[in-house]
Length: 372
Image 1 (cartoon, rainbow, N blue to C red):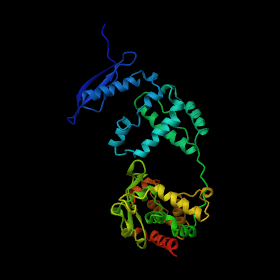
Image 2 (cartoon, rainbow, N blue to C red):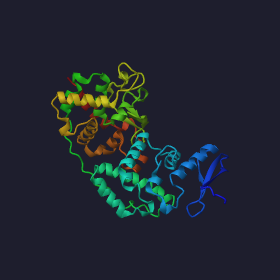
Image 3 (cartoon, rainbow, N blue to C red):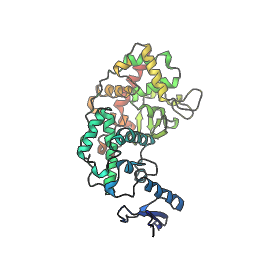
């Protein structure tokens, strides 16, 4: 009796001239699938790809495929999703991929894992969102819903489901956390504290306060990106994954007052460099020192919700509350790197000479924080 293999592998020459192994498989009814690329021109590697897919049950009929089977390896480097992101110029940061994997593992698979893709409907998703509301914050739940949408959209594109069941469902409302921001007088006392240890940490704190930059952008700033009156912000530094793109994946320049004198205080490689090593000052060191100094000054950072990121809140509030008011909102958004009003950003090209108000306010804030 002839035994039919669950899949066949064959070499196909692409229009570019490159040869790649493709595969086809037969579902449980014996129906042959369209041809899919293995992404390799090596037969052994192509066989491993097909065997892995077969072991994961991805050669079954679409109405029998489990969610966990389809989602297996979805965010791996060699997955269809990540390859497509890379090809179309929208590849995600390693830290983002890692967070997607955590959400899939902790919030999505425990509920949907053993369900068949075809059986997941809008009512099922609603029950999941209620389930999430009892286990995690609204922000985490919303992030998980976004990841779930990505996976189900891919399932629809592969014609495994007819509709994305969560496409019309709203996200949970996030209640804004009340914070009591640091005052300029408190910033002055914190800046002059003798407890900073490394001077680079004190300078990083000051730069955060007068630019509103994210702490990862501060620690990831390299010496060649520092000018007399501006910073070229192109990266963020992640403690685990190293240098990566900014949160919005957009490079920008940030004005700084010349009196800050940051350029002449930079390290050999990093703008905020450890005193004895050619390594950047870490965000957790700056955060730890800030909390220590707040404690020493009697500032209840826990009750007030104060963190390093609070300096960003403080900067934006200070700018918007200035005498220039809402007339500089667009410029503030450009400085801090917010992604909203994308079409306006697309047509706007900022230059240093277009920021006289920002420089004036920064100069005043710099003096208020540093004066003895």
